[in-house]
Length: 404
Image (tube, rainbow, N blue to C red; front, side, top):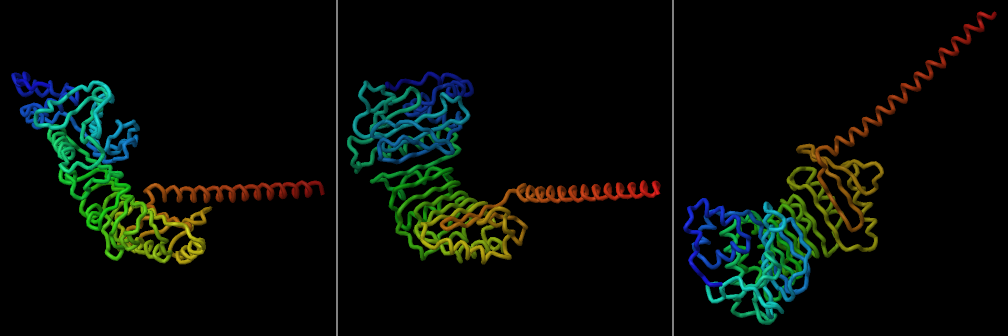
């Protein structure tokens, strides 16, 4: 693409902003990459609201991409190892997403459509993969790590460009297996102040990185399935509003008791003691901890004789919780400080404590009231029948007296 003077700057600001808003997303991005004045103007007006997701995954043919609360199933270009995804929720569906994929090898088997001046500020070639929505960037010539990390610097510059020219309201990260990805030192943690979703799988991370993800980052929903050197002896602060941890050998029940998450799900690698679960329920009942909890789900490997632990748990909860009709492994408990009610479920290798919604308890009371009303109606019917029988007996006695 030859860099020529941008003719739209002959227009006043407002008409010019309307013209930029009518451009296809890839056109606006390309113009901003090639013309600094366009970037400055687009930065000032920020014509579109967007959600941005980074994906790092060198399992080259994984057909999945996550963006915020949206999941799109599609086939990525072969040999893609990282991508950046833009979703525009307020635009028409056919225009609402754009993806840039970094590939190793060569760009494509057909004649590439060049969209950026490769001799300019942007050093890596880009081609169109799907019309107006998918673009591929030649990041590496082979799968081995590039010591210069030109591709990562390019992705950082591209991400900053998106942050400048769009109103990015949500940032998400998905990291699967990627051998040479420096997770802790990545630029992605420096761009937004808060993340919508972070999902990290199939990585081994350090103690320091584990604490960074759990304690320092501001993220609404965090999902971890990683190996870590983090010690169970040192307490962890679990604070993400939604936290999902799989294959966990670094968090403890004490960490769960002290967490400030609203929804917490942990799959432990070792068995959880039923006495600890009794203590967990009691601290919630007393109102000393877990005040913001809405739901806790805990799982662990199944072992022999765990049915005994289930029985012991409910024996210790007698007098504390109320049994639920027709439920053998569920009870309800009430918090002493504010009267909130939670349902507790425990069975062998699974524990759940979920806060009841405002209408749940009312529904149970209504059912009991309905049963009482039915009983009252039955009693009234019985009384009416008895009265009718008495009246019939009196009438028959009177008839007999008249005959006499």
